[in-house]
Image (tube, rainbow, N blue to C red; front, side, top):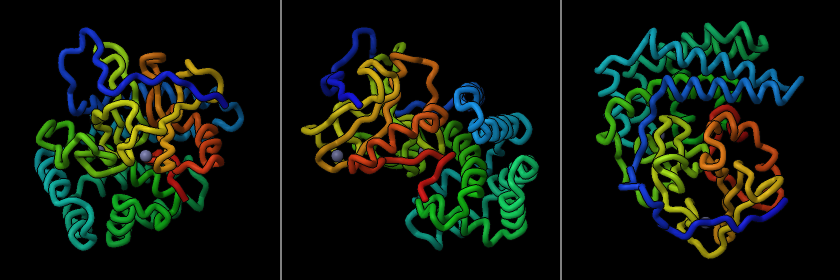
Amino acid sequence: MLSSSDIVAPDKRTPGVVAIDPAIYPMLDKLYARRIERLKAQALLQGENGEYFRFLTHLVQAQRDSLAQAPLEQADVEAIYNLLKQGISDTTQLEHSLGNIQCWQAAYATLATQLAPMLPQKVAQALGTLSADKTELVKAATHLLQADYAQVDAGVAVVLWAALSTCWAQAVARKQGEGITQPLAHATHCPCCHAPPVASLVMGGAREGLRYLQCSLCEVRWHRVRAVCVACDASGQMDHWTLDNAKSAIQIETCGDCKSYIKTLRLDYDPELEAVADDLGSLLLDSAMETEGFMRVGINPFSFPA
Ligand SMILES: [Zn+2]
Ligand SMILES: [Zn+2]
């Protein structure tokens, strides 16, 4: 593994970039289409082990179909927005709010029905059992939103998170700037929905060189200055790592101060990359960093930590 020194100084501005958008809201149909393409590419790359990636292309296609077939009602947008304003730390309040919002429960039931035939019988059964038990379903969603992932069966968690994500992302995209409930400058978690990031993106195009973190739940990207640790704000012991060469588009950023790391996708090197799919396709890098004693910042919603 090589260490690269390709770090731009904090807040170095790129000519032509007029103002930094604090948050970029998802264009969901386009995002899902890109994710499906990248998952398909990974399925081919992984050969015989590509089965899980093929399953995920169906999952994301089902999320994409739900945008057209069952878009969120305005009342659902408002209800989710109110839940986000309350925050997620009060378990009783979160369970109560989740129980009153029907759209994510319906989205989960639809996904569970559509995907069950593609899954091992045990997982398919677990999906169906949860669909039929609203109290347990609400509890499971509460565990996931509070980052208590080990409490939920790993196969169920992926489908349940996908259902929540489709609803949360639509709500946040419709509310735009109103959805920001936390200050942005030092946010390690999503300023809209409080979920952890998937990865760090170094942008290309009109935002060339700027760094955004992408939310694992509502798909919002929020700006964070580069060369500063997203977990502890220190900048003294930052390193970038790749598996092959320093110009690799998929990198790891480590902080020696707090021993955390985050996956970094260089969209300026490869604009085709997609955070969730390409992070999942490069988990080898994560294993290498964990062997070195670094802890990951954030999650991949298709591979929850055990
Ligand atoms: Zn979010
Ligand atoms: Zn740090």
